[in-house]
Image (cartoon, rainbow, N blue to C red):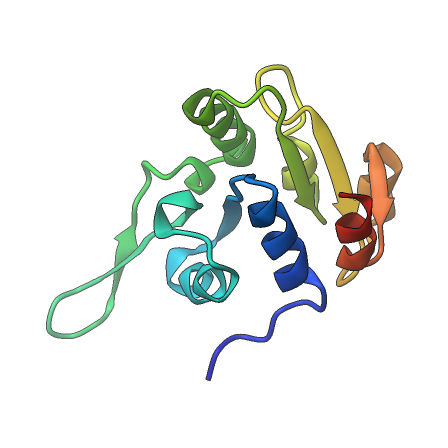
Length: 144
């Protein structure tokens, strides 16, 4: 069964794609969990920055993670944002997120604008520092 998406996210991504914008998923979670979400949203695997978990051949036991992934270390989302901006040669980069590590991506050379999303979890400290705080994805879609 496909993962449940936050209401409005599919429409937002479709609207961004319709405007010729590339969309990336940057997550401290595991790629294994992020890829099915990306597939539903039409985001290519190459546009996912998340952790890769390794399993032992045969037993399937946990065998570690890829410590070369941006998000495997503190400050990783900020490094991923800088990488994406350099890779795409984008004039501006917007990061949407609900946590402090998402907010960290807004720094010189990284995200130019941070949108605090409170549609799932409301973290006041993040929303207070956001350039724009929204409670649902429809608000972002309508603003495009």
